[in-house]
Image (cartoon, rainbow, N blue to C red; front, side, top):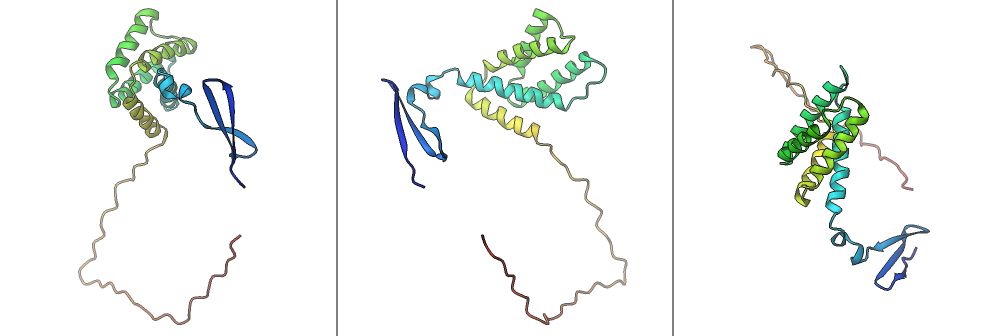
Length: 185
């Protein structure tokens, strides 16, 4: 299959180049015009940070058992969020954002109120996220989402009692190993 592209002029300042080889026969934009790239959207870090923080909050929420109602759940969630924020050097901003929302609305006592509360906190924290912090945030999400398995303590090393003998016996190969016949498709 040969690669080909088509250039379409949407307006005089923006040209799109389409590539039909990524997912034939669909046209996919090959190169984003400079007028629409990241540098043209100064709020792209904020937008990505909001999405990443929502993923982090949801990932943390999945791990919390909801015993005893919304208040203990929210307290556990805030404690876990504080630990996560500390890892990306955003603990102060998070604590301030939560405090501001508590003063404005009080502690949430229903799930819908918790959702609105968290959305406001997320927006406040996202405004302070830099590109470097965003990289740390994504790394944190990956670590939170993938369970970390820790092996049990290693078994104690066995001790041979005095007088026991361990021997390894090597015997010559009697016959040649048969060839493995396989066909590649």
